[in-house]
Length: 368
Image 1: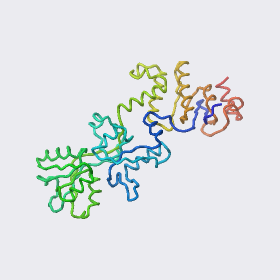
Image 2: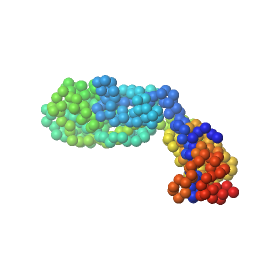
Image 3: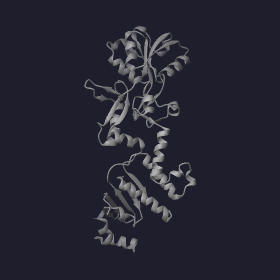
Image 4: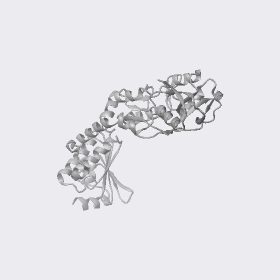
């Protein structure tokens, strides 16, 4: 009897499901590194209200911070296992590329150029924003189109400088950009009178306006001069290749990495499907007839992989007709007929001497 806990569900439709519940997923390279360290290194801003901002006690709050904590909770079952690394817009990509942070959750715009030239991968958009501008009321302007000849404060390392140039060029407006390294330096320079206008993502514009000493002396202009899909980013191609190879080796087919699906046997395709699922770091895997239409040798390969995953603690739900496989790996059998549970037993007792008449009839048809 295997030591892991497994539940096996058998139904009147002659299918069986084995549920293996004994811990978390075996980690890929990046996840394994995080787990060994004992915390997630999450790159955040140096202070943008609503996204990532430390309070007076040093506790970080905001949308990007909550995302980091959610990922930590998924990895460790503990949302506090996060190291927040405050990064300027200019330094954030270097930090991710160098491995100083595992994840960049820093109101970062998802662009094709960042994915193709910086080796980054964006998983999801968690906030749709756009670039806005904050002006002094004393200028008497009501629109960005009234800003010809203005000086504009902005932060380096963002998409804002290019967006500003494109927009002002479109409307034949002249301006002078004054660039600062950090968001704090930028807004302080604007408030001190170094510039006529401050620009950033509109969410940051409103957040920074609320912190000014005299916020009513300033006006947010109505235009959004760009679209900014913001989201978390991680390392891309190299990391993905390492993870893919790790799991192809895990299912014993690393030599098939360069082949197309049509060049693979049925068993190899099943192995790739398992590897692909593992790359997504699931907490539970569903196998629907994983050995269907496979030759005996490949059946053994697939079943051996599943047993090995079970030994490592993977949780799996397996629908199978392999009655020889089911009793080998299950710790508990739950027999169901037309929906209701009619018998619960340990595997040996269930397969040798089932108590319920329906279970006996089922097994007599399948095993004899």
